[in-house]
Image 1 (spheres, rainbow, N blue to C red):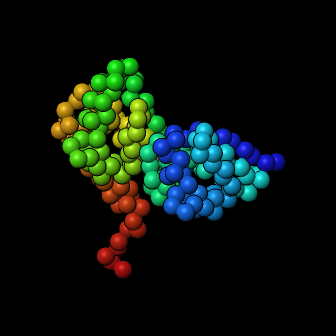
Image 2 (image 1 turned 90 degrees about the vertical axis):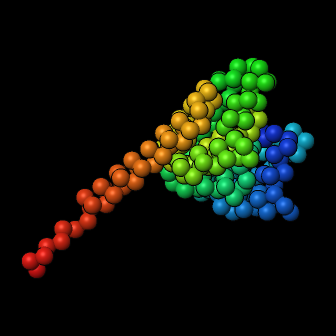
Image 3 (image 1 turned 60 degrees about the vertical axis):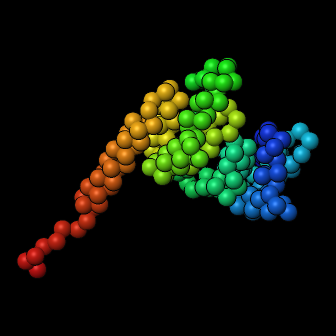
Length: 193
């Protein structure tokens, strides 16, 4: 049973799917065991596989969608990790149809010289891309949930400091949880032996 699906990519992102001298396309084909046909005129990328068992066409679809949403092919390949997934937020849900409001929300999420986006990435460990009317996130469930919460707060008008403090508290809690889990799993040390 063969598999084939078409993913629409913005025309200005087609070159990123192909890569320099076709390197990104070739890497994606080898990694996911699929073949890609890229139409530079329409922006359609056809993902084909002989069978879903033989290759990983669903991961390939996610990776192409991530590249279409502004991620570099190398960053999008994080989706090959078993627990990683892609989530896309539509900023029009926060800004409405006004182009000025959309630009303001985008600017709040990116921050001055990309600082806000960078802080969100550092504190959540999720990767974030702001492209057009969307914000895309790659990470595991807890990373994406935390990044989504931070981005939603910024989009709704929360102060950057409040968002950073929330992220810092969540990061500290996650570290403490990991330490407690590690302590629970470590073997008991018996000084009498």
